[in-house]
Image (cartoon, rainbow, N blue to C red; front, side):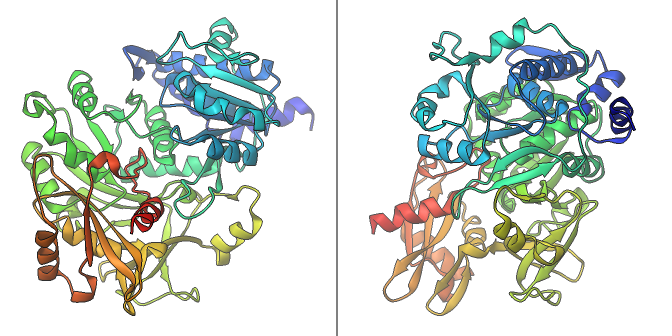
Length: 529
């Protein structure tokens, strides 16, 4: 078979993430695909811009298999870059914009990236790492909010390169369905970050799930505040492009802007952690915003506290509610609790997504009976290819043909899955196992508690002391005695926090996705003892 014939056969049958905008542009050329900072981008414009960016990378010398790193808040340039890079078989390595120079250095070096593009306001933290990024051939700046930021000597200006590129033709590069299309590093809540290899095929299978499990339809308009370096942000971006929906992109989560954009763009779909659903009603003039367009709401990262759901049900009585469980390693499929069961089974994380199998294993990888706690394991075509350059860790995590999530759970008699805790968040206190999440779920029911994190702290007597960090609602006072008394009414004595501390929301070490970094919290509190 000649080279042209091979390419033609590849394009005929393949699945490449970069092909998604092209196909949607053919179906919905003039519909609005993206809204960002006052700009409205049609599906036709989106694909042309992705093609332009692909040609920018080609002219810089990027080849199939090259890694390209980015550190940026949400922006159009990143979207064009990721999907454009996919069109030519390159792999984008997105970094959390909160990383410090040593963390940046580790990830970009581990990924072996040839190119590294940096948002204007993040240049200072990258410049400290730049001298040690000797393998990076070209550094570049992305202008978003600070167009007057000086371009460091020797750096590229990606905005200028993009603006000067006129070629909008579709790149013709042969790629494989199982080729890596993104290299996302875990948040490092347990140890050094690990590079998760997600492929074109794994993302394709998440797209199959979106329509079936999340009821995403063409007339939906979603507000995407989740960072695009996060697997959930990437999934939602691709699904909304794939189904011809409008996506309103937020630079970073901002409660007031969420309300404003929902009203002005008639947003129908929200996807947020419970923390944001708790915070939003306390925003100034909340009652003055028209949120009647909202029809579908998803909670992820933690079980929705019943009082918060009841509050929102009164505000939006006809809305559909779902929760979502998944991981970067699972692409991020896992399970979803559907609207028909949401209130009845609110303490569960639902049933497996379309195309996903889930079981509960003991420490010897034997399946446990219904109702018994064990590790949540899953398999399906959305699961990662493995950890980059970590063959032993990959073999350990994917042993026996199952993704071992490190999460503890159980099934009930109806087949609903319960998330009980992270294995590493299980507290060993006085000879008993205490699930931090169980204690958190109880404390969330206290009317004065807006946010809570429970961790085990070193203790001479208890070995690990059950300790609770409480964020009260704004303007509300609560005492340690109140929290302990409430816990004693609802928990066995050994599960009751032996220590209660109070923090402001901004003091908690939290990822933009809403996930509390418990390892960092434990370390900080241990040092204060």
